[in-house]
Length: 127
Image (cartoon, rainbow, N blue to C red; front, top):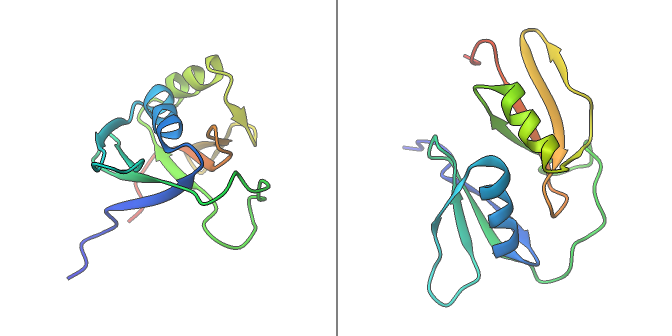
């Protein structure tokens, strides 16, 4: 029986730097580092995880928000304004303006490797 998605992997030329970005900017914690590897797992407060693995090459050219493939990770928050202010104070690169649609407040931004993230506070959870 499938129970859910345990983690998503991101390949980075510097997994430790990217993991620390998630710690410093989004309050993730580093919860696992396999011995003899540069892989780092980071965990959000709700238990969701990102595995950051070492890439085979330097960063590729940035992709657009609607290019084929995995396009963003949505980061759920309970206090949108506080998290947004924190990210702004840390000079995060925002890709869109803040908007509220149907009671959901959101903005798109990127991490230090250029991966697209989606800050999201829903008025009501999806069914």
